[in-house]
Length: 192
Image (cartoon, rainbow, N blue to C red; front, side, top):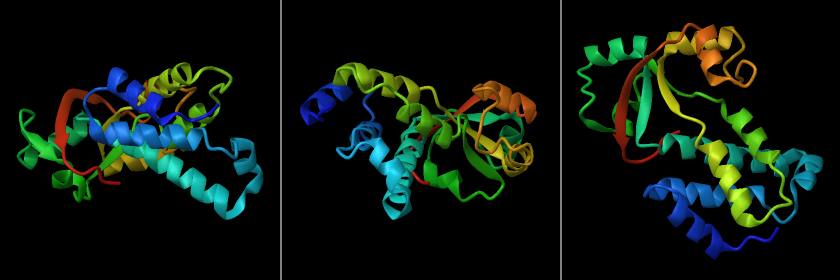
């Protein structure tokens, strides 16, 4: 499948919210997934090229989710944030909370699983159909702000980088992470 940048740009404008960061990252992800060498070459190459390729693809996927305008908040995190003066009506810069060592910005579906789902998409379709599937998978991830302790629990349960039978909800249930139902509105530079 050939990459037609005009089709990608038109797809972004017609199918995505007005989020410049996500549109640029989506464009990058499509170009990486449809690389001219093919994913089989990348897998066979191993070494530096494969490592760089997967790093850049994973980083783009992670930043796509981090560019969302709102993040979920676990109940335990909400308690910590409230002690720091959190107000759900305020839109915060991502930088405001990023350096807080007591919280972690967690991908509900770990990036490595999202990456594999994207790599497994059938490329024997037209570009628009392919991009719809990519966007569907990318949009199925959210960011949740969890406590460092909750993150440690996920890691202890070996769920830091995987879901439970593909379910992001079961991943949190297994680790006893409860979503508060509140969201943090964010803006500014995407940090990772």
